[in-house]
Image (tube, rainbow, N blue to C red):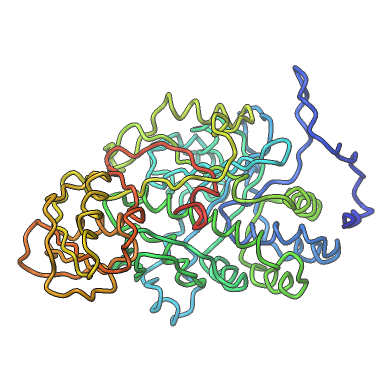
Length: 500
């Protein structure tokens, strides 16, 4: 459909060529263009919906409703601009805007920390065909640059902190300055979202589908998901992306779930009819007004241009990673335990952003093969006894062989259960070995976990008719929280349809 007209008050830009032209040497950097809001889920929704071409007036009214912040005021000694566009996306606490009922329902008690709960750099390629999302752990060791407090005029020298504390100390400006100093990547736009806008946007999109191979239960956030696929509303989605106490991976595990959720959100926004429905478009824009903060340069033309660029966007167009960690539990006097980046690996990552190079260039674009499910316990350390709970002869023997191939320490001596009409496969386990049980159920999706005190370390699998096909056994691999894997995934590899 025709592109919405631009405001007559702004100068016309040259029309874009229909195809990407190879960049000649020493090419001048393109003028600043739209910046894409990947992590800020609410802002992402706004931008995606702008591609519907509802009209310049509607988007202009949206522009007027976004709160502004001067994130780049008086900044000096900034990195040189590279190719493509870089957006700093931060998710702030914002629990002071949550109702008392929501606080109780979603375990949001306590005082707001006035810090950044999530920090990501989103790089949009120069040809608008790829987005790279790099998660920056909130506990990263950082050194804030010297600055002058705008309110008091007091000078502050550089000093070490955790990265998420930069916001509490100096707001968006110090956050941007600290990230630029650490990465040498010039930030072009700043976008900020809080809890309220996140929940509302997920709700008006009709929820977001996530899947998990293992049960997810976090007493701190109240998250309680069985293994399988779930459609999360706003409140549950907030629990999902905030949960840090599911396993030993803590914040690193949470960042992976945030990336997974973001890929699912992109799929929901691009595959649902929201882009073609003006009423739903209006509802989403109303949901985010007053909750998003953006830098002063992110305006109407940026929303429209970015929306048009995203018309053909899909999860496979995105790639996700976490900045490489060189040392866990890096102790800093006066700060405590931090995560120290790997200077060499992180340097290569941020150089790729500056050069506008994809992180998955060596992998062909194709339908994603199922990835091994990360588990807490090495399957080689999990002892398993199989028993046949059906009338089908040899079923337990076949599943025993399949689990052994997947790496589990089976007995290779399956037995016959006392009952022969088990419909759903049951994993019986001693509660003291619950981590082993969660690792085993990841390989047998859909099985029932049944705690049996006093069983000891041996887990028992009673095979039901639901596992007639031994090919249903999923591959699993140990994920060591002390040695986080620095991998890169495409969005289509982590949404439910991609084998997640």
